[in-house]
Length: 146
Image 1 (cartoon, one colour):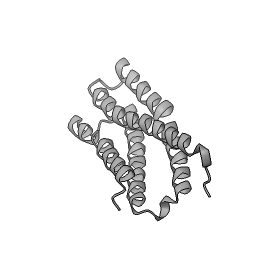
Image 2 (image 1 turned 60 degrees about the horizontal axis):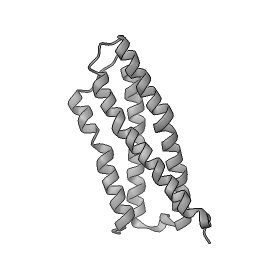
Image 3 (image 1 turned 30 degrees about the vertical axis):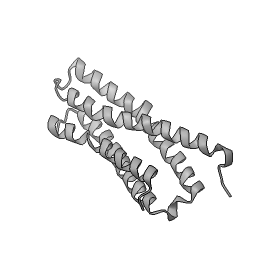
């Protein structure tokens, strides 16, 4: 018996839409950090980057993350995903991306306090994390290799 019934495809579509929003934000924020770190602490440009980063988190990233989780758990329950091997790895990657999201929020707060603890190179490398995770998640969901 399906919980979602005829709404399943609508919920799946909404889940995917918000995953796209989330991933866009996860790609954008580290790039913002690279540019932010180039400006002097306390400058007018510094305040603008602090505002941009806060808005990206508040308006796009945080709501998208919550919606992705709620809809994703509904979908997982509906199809009985808890018994599927591929789902366990997908869930682990989603938990890791959620932690990455939280770390980005923490680094935004550090930048707002004037702390620049990472190099531009490290931030650029960290920007690859969501892309790699997304590629693996897509393969798991589409191919279901195990």
